[in-house]
Amino acid sequence: MYQVKRREAKMKKVLMAGLVLCLVALLLLPMGLGCAGPKAKVPTIKVGIIGPMTDIQGRNHWQGATMAMNEINEAGGIKVGEAKMPIELIKANSNENVSVPDSVTAMEKVITRDGADFVVGGNRTESVLAMQDVAMDNKTIFLNCGSGGVEVCSRVAKNYDRYKYTFRVATLNSNYLAQVLVLVLKSVSKQAKAQLGTDKLKVALLMDKLDWAEPIVKAAPPIIKGLGMEVAGVWRPSATASSLSAELTAIKGSGANIILTGLAGASGIVYAKQWEELEIPACSVGINIEAQSTSFWAATGGKGNYETTLNFYAPVAITSKTLPFIEKYQKQFGEFPPCYASTYDALYVLKEAIERAGTLDADTIVAELEKTKYEGVGGTIAFYPLDNPAPHDLVFGPGYVTAVAIQWHDGKMTCVWPDGDWQGVKYPGTVEYAVPPWVIKK
Image 1 (tube, rainbow, N blue to C red):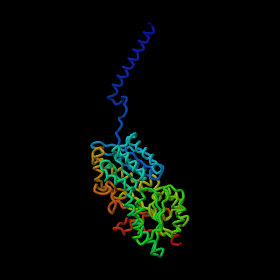
Image 2 (cartoon, helix red, strand yellow):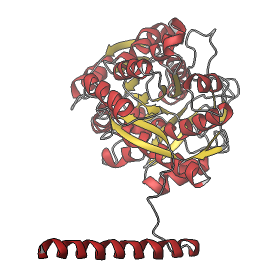
Image 3 (cartoon, rainbow, N blue to C red):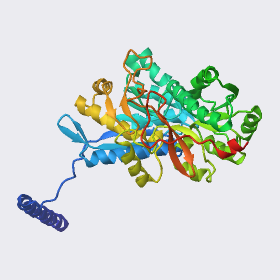
Image 4 (cartoon, rainbow, N blue to C red):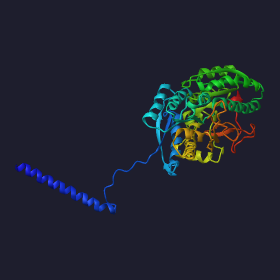
């Protein structure tokens, strides 16, 4: 009986103490001193950034997107109707340069488990096509920022209802890249003819054995012949080759004066080093993804001099945004932005479409993306309409995106194309292509 009364007395004390605390809390609430409950989480727009995060492509996908996110969020976020919503980035390592299945898993995870509202990025065409199907299954808008595969957007024409959620923000598709390569080749051949004192030039094709390069390999030979040059041969190494000495030795033996490259993988570093070390007597021009960033110079140990590659950006005023963007990017990340940093423009294109739509409904945003005309860093971004063979692809040409060619001069990146011969396009700060001295010597 004593113990029961003791427990009852204890309970009364506890209840009284609780009552006193509640009264104190009620008195303090008007003064703003009450205990605050958990803060309501601000809803965000989740954007998955997908790419091979351990490689140059994924690293710059993430850096470009991070830079845009910070700018947009600091300005208040994206206006959706009457609300302002910040961007939240989700990093998705696709490992796509090595494994297509890994890229599919990464895309599934970022959409279904991480809850991405939109996905931006993608590099290797074989992987992008597989990732694209996952995004389309989930009716998720996918802004591609790296694959040149034509099929990525030609699928939109074949089955609009399924693939309408796909848009290419960068780079140009392989057909347009082939056109630009020919224009740059034509420009380089003029300098080569003048410096080498011959009108009879031979061109060797050195292209990755990957899907994106197939249209270029097919289209280039007849065009080269049409320019009055001879095709010395075609070499198709692995994009991950650790040595290209065999190919370069064979090219040297073919008597080629120019090597037209298409190297999207790490082999671009190996190639540039061996091309200079072996003093292959041929100008090198084309696509070398590794040479698009300032990290290239250190990676080659300074042995990438005179290497020339197409790029999305160059240290010239392509638009009013180009030079300020490059300066800020280099300051933040310590490297020059390659085309994969176009995730920066992609987020702004997406922002404008969402704000015009006033909703996060994917179908409504698609209709607004189709109206895009945005001054980006590498040119004016617009997408081809539905009557084009590749709807939602990036518009190519003067006044839009042209791409550029850069050449390395003693550790510095210089713009050498467009040089004014193509529809009068030439950006302020462009210089003349330089034939490597060992090529002239040989």
